[in-house]
Image 1 (cartoon, rainbow, N blue to C red):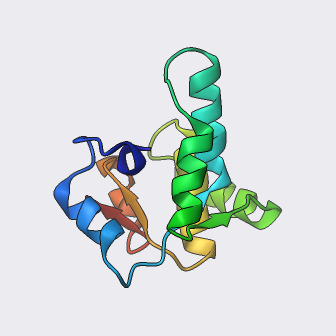
Image 2 (cartoon, one colour):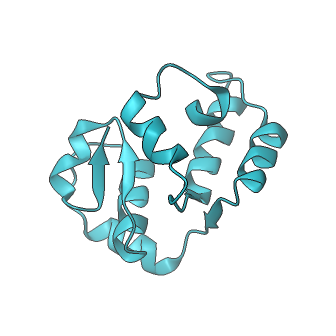
Length: 116
């Protein structure tokens, strides 16, 4: 969301990693779901169509949520109470990806989390 909006909340390191020509980008359906919830309760204004168009333009791969991801998420140590964060970490683990996040509470999950 911050990337597509050009928000200063996205740090320069994260922006550089995302914009690098050799970066393969992924977005989780879990993130899309969370954005939908935040939008529906009025905590966020988000233009799904515009962002989806930008994701398509950049050939960003969507990661669906699977039962295997749910099992991995359930087995993770609870570092905080955000089930969306746990699922994103689980997907990064299961798909051999790196989750870019500002949430330093996720750092103990190891090499699948990069705090930027």
